Length: 351
Image 1 (cartoon, rainbow, N blue to C red):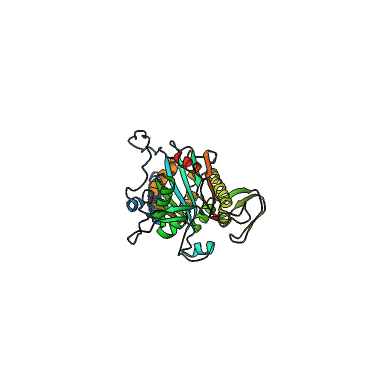
Image 2 (tube, rainbow, N blue to C red):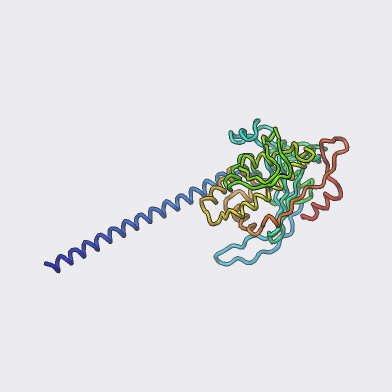
């Protein structure tokens, strides 16, 4: 009896273990399925966030020549080499008020949107150093004829405000105007709107900046005492838009604040450790892509990740910020024109 009872107990224990293992296996399988489904949904969601414009097709061959590229190392069987060639990216901050969030942050309608911020980001070959060149929006330029998405083209305009290019022809005209002004081919185009910028800063946990003077700007609704401040997204956006009571009150003072913000964002990204925190990485990616418009060469999560990975070695200390040399327009004290030959020499150094 004892032997049979022991065998019976042993059999029941084996049966229970078997059932437990099956249950654990089913649970693990369910978790894996849900994980794969969640990852697939996240990838689809982030991809769907990105808006794009086919600038290459719109402009055709009437553009500056592409820069010579450096051969990349041969890929292994399991990995693809990250790109290392020099790169020029036109980055615009749009003052479009489309959508409730943008209207709440900027006011007004979606009509007549302009490029509130314009920077040409030149990444050197090797992608460990970069130069960010700001173009004052008040610069008077010759705006070239640009193709319209609805057909036809805009007229050439002389002594036009630089930021009017975006107003009359969107991203395509903005790129063509910059290329006409600089003689430099823009390899990529990136545009972020008000809400997207504010969300990015919040997803990163804010940014720390130091102001040399008090700020009290009624238009941007920002009041800061001189000193160091940790800003949330709404405050950082207000800082990027502040121009009154800074320097001479022109766009040049605002550019200085914007360049400071660029470096502060790079420092915050480095300090956040996104690659070790998947949840925060997703929040940042969601914030970035939600307000993003790119050219078709960057309009997928895979392409953006490849660009981001190629720039991992880029620290704020290796980023030089400058402003295109300008002088006051002789016929309009509220506008500026390129200061030659200094401006031309700057652009030549980026080709």
